[in-house]
Length: 472
Ligand code: BGP
Image (cartoon, rainbow, N blue to C red):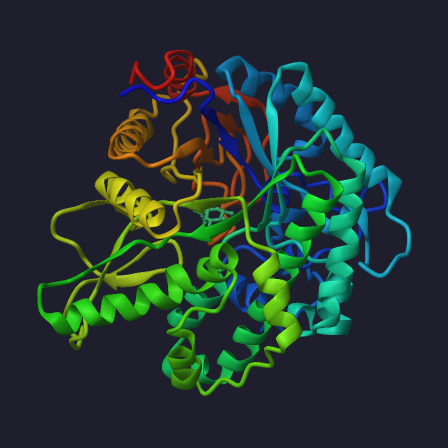
């Protein structure tokens, strides 16, 4: 079966990983600006950093990103050349409300996104806007404790209202929170004692984000009934390591918490039946009022979107002596049937077909894959060409899986590869880990001309889109 004619082919980015220009045109400092590359990154990302001011010892890659802020015309022209139908991007809250507390939005920030939308329109590329891709004004983090504070919901609603009103009729596709569930994945990666200490805060901040998401879904629909608003889940697909029922149960419990807890709320509008058991396990007391439940019920999403990179294996047994592997916020033991990328993430295209079926069976609403790709180090040849056949191979297999899932009956409406242009890695803060069809001359230390170069995958993806996924 062919892909639907209006299938949304494209690529994805996030403001904090590409825009740079952190201190221009009235933008405020954001939490992501002070996330250093290297070993201290996660401490800060998780809100455990001692440094809430940038220092001279660290490199802060978000501050300059790939300077999309000043290169957007050139970059969008290249996306158009590949034939993109959709471009996923996020808006940086601190560009619109520099501290989050202002009564009026920063006009220059709004203008920057107007410029992008006008440019996209020129090429008939539909924007897909993530309202929150981890970017929070630093003031809110420092003074209000960020999302742990219920008051942040109101500030976020003010920001979202501004976007819905300003870009009414221009943006039709929105995502509320990027990978909303990754807070739970972070929790699972912590040693048991730290996880126990962090659980109350994590589930509370997540409750606030889920409420905020539901509130702004309703708001977005009220402002423009044409708006299509989706959730976005980090789909850390997992399999039981063996047919031992203990492994199957361990996998089920992990899935309930990591994969389904948030989307069950966002799609079905209620906390799932198993959530009490999870809260008990972590000793969490959540303040879920009757009013909260009504908000969650009324703010369900129109479509389900997710990121897909790799899969992992779950076992109930002691993993001592077994080879451990990591993925996108996941950890497990090595799957002997799969190959692994240089950054240690399993390459599993069948897992994408499996995930798509699992999701569509569960929710029955339109689905979009909004992140997928291979993080790899590229080599620029003397003639500026880049032969990234490994990336083409990865994407070819995953697009084949999309086609299979559509044959299975999944209502898949779009596909945006992650980091369609090289940008800063979220997990490590490196530039060396590249996903793009477009190479950006910038290294881990922040040096480079920022020159853009087309990789072999650029020409390949252009052909794929032109043939609507037939010519792989
Ligand atoms: C997802 C994030 C993206 C992106 C991606 C790849 O979790 O939503 O922002 O960065 O992971 O991760 P990395 O860039 O670290 O390889």
